[in-house]
Length: 327
Ligand SMILES: NC(=O)c1ccc[n+]([C@@H]2O[C@H](COP(=O)([O-])OP(=O)(O)OC[C@H]3O[C@@H](n4cnc5c(N)ncnc54)[C@H](O)[C@@H]3O)[C@@H](O)[C@H]2O)c1
Image 1 (cartoon, rainbow, N blue to C red):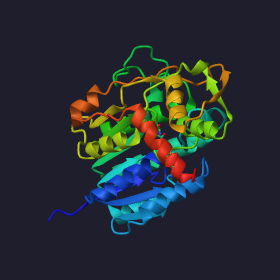
Image 2: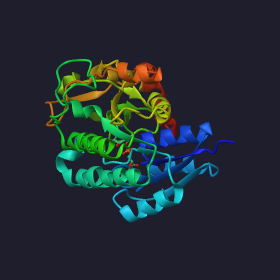
Image 3: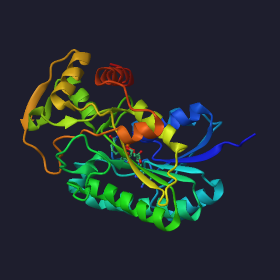
Image 4: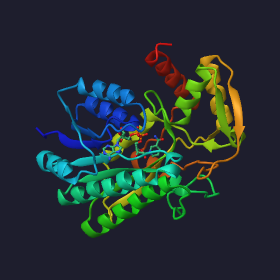
């Protein structure tokens, strides 16, 4: 019988990493290894709660608290488990936080990322999947955003580090023939989501009858993508490593159904049955007016595109939020 593939998920206590690890464990097709440094960028309790759900499953999940900037610890892990596939989700995320804390992004997303890349090459990993972002498109004004568009002008340092990741990985694919898929996620949301992201922030403030800061009159447009759809896409991609001469590809992971933030807030209000109190603010530095990705390339490759609509996605989030906080 064919033995199970060894898969490493970095950032497994994070939002996407948790959902992905959980789905991989449940599929019973992989031996799942997770690492995370459990940093305090946002609620450690939420990260530990996610992790505890994963750890309950002792049979095919192993966790180690490892920082990807620690090369020797990472090296020991790679040596011991001989991973077939790596999904690198560990990073300092967030556009706005990168305005005041660029050093953190440099350390985790550049130095840490390099360790993952180098070890994947040294240990001949068969497929490395890396997290990139829609933010690499900057202020492109043609829509939908297509993978072939220019991404050389990132508007935030966060986006700059993610673009660097793509470029670094491309060179490793070229030189060492390391198969890499760079996944450009578009505003992922869902249950157990990040407290620094709009859905969580707005829900909390509206629920507590506090004012919400609404930038650009709520006219920002975002291609919100439901987390289960993102996870399904990643799982299908794992077995579709690029096989070109330079085995590297970038892929949008998006719903391709953009909506205005105003409508998004309406949906939250509807589900909470509370009207929001808005504080209108101007556009912020580094902010992007619109994201709307094309998912043609990925749907051709894996015959799947994210389909959960925003009404259902927000409903599921609020249901989780209310039960998590006993409301
Ligand atoms: N959520 C989104 O909408 C979105 C959009 C675009 C890109 N991304 C990217 O996808 C990935 C996952 O995002 P997320 O929303 O799950 O974020 P998250 O912050 O919830 O998850 C990241 C996890 O990585 C861990 N981590 C950070 N630095 C680390 C380090 N040096 N060593 C080990 N662990 C470390 C954190 O503790 C966290 O648990 C990130 O790379 C992010 O930049 C996310």
